[in-house]
Length: 513
Image 1 (tube, rainbow, N blue to C red):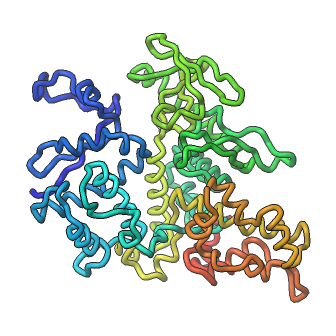
Image 2: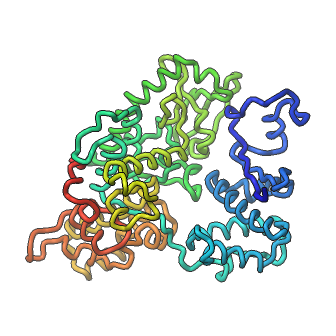
């Protein structure tokens, strides 16, 4: 065996029982691991000779690695492990890697026809960032790779995983994948809908708010937006600083209908899961539990709690990250229950990364319903475009991209319909108030409009404002185009947008009804 291994430090309540007392001279392994500064979710690099690399252990405990988000830590550690395997195959110790070693590795990862799993520009740029962080921390001179150098970055950095689904395509995907519908729109008799309300409510909240998976997935029950805007169609809430990527909170807006679906889930499926967990004593066995005593409102809302030992604590609500939030409970009629909004069937907090499995299961069910057995035998990446295109494919982040595209088109329509602006008027309006691109940027919480245009709205970034809606208004040549028709036209004219009118035949549209 010539491969490095990655071992992840488990949560306090997920340690497996040791095979025997005093293993390796340690009686309490969790305490020993915590004693050297490792935290739950931290990676431990094990060399091919099954020794823990002490220098990499110091890197994991360093300030530069500590400040990363948990998902970034996992991604960087996985990227570094692949590089370690490459260097080991050359008998090169990682802190002695040269620019030539990294150039050869990049060539293998991105260009070599002998590599069956080459990566694109965005993936390489992420890997380069991980390696740069490691080599700078280790003070390797000269730097084998530097993500700050233009020659070490890939020019083709637009993510190939980005996808957009039109509203009615999301409807088809949800009906088949989350509600168990068949091609004709009827419900599959064998469908087990134990978490249907939770899953559909989560997706609707994503689609109507544009929140990231972690931002929506780590909300607490009392953070669900309830204050409606003037006409009652939208509610607004606050994304806490600690849950955002740039650690700066923002206001978000969600459709009242989507919020209503979440509230229905709270009253039914979620309440049932909490009741069962209380009956089975799940919460009593948790090693860490903080019961909220009060939430003090104000400019900086603060959460007060007491732990199992009766020790009080408090923290600004905006500063609580997802790992701390899962230990927060409120006192319910039958005892403590999680403050975490989204729960598993067992009544435990559903961590944000577990939503990927829900989307993956829905994608597979869409394939089962919409493809023939022969077509399903071929992996998705190897299917013909005609076959792959007949099945809607969604990810949590696709909801955010789709929200951006929907809001851009909607805002453009509203500006034109409300004010009847000419092209010159629109330019003046944009100079005074900001055009729809900037409004969408604000809704997504981006710091740079170019991020919004290049990554989130790539299908229409090359189009001028008026060209998007050239056929959407009544120009005397025929009836005005509806939003669904605008999306269908964009799907025909640009790549990356999934719309049922383009992708599916008429027989599959029954599932939308």
